[in-house]
Length: 105
Image 1 (tube, rainbow, N blue to C red):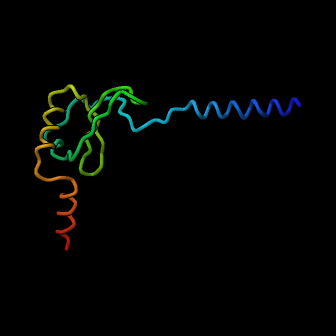
Image 2 (image 1 turned 90 degrees about the vertical axis):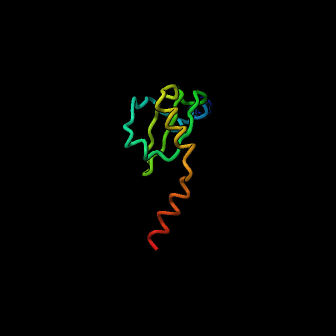
Image 3 (image 1 turned 90 degrees about the horizontal axis):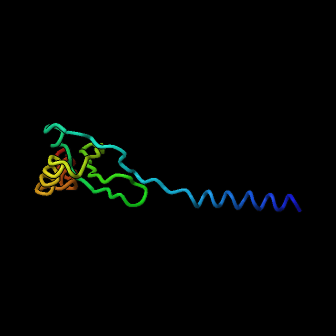
């Protein structure tokens, strides 16, 4: 009888611990303070990180051409300017990939 109770409590505690764990997204934990203009040219897209869920700080996450991710402070002037530049570009990431592959032909 004691073994059954002990086994039940062990299973119950494991289930509670599994349910209590919060899945951690790919969150930014700190910001890059600045980015040189030459490096800014390699930014192809961006997304916003909100403070809801498992992420602690708001951020703008830039994705570079080779897939590198850079976390920035959304209140910085240079970040807002770079977001505008990306939005105003006539080409998109999919167009860039298509052009890159079509040159090999």
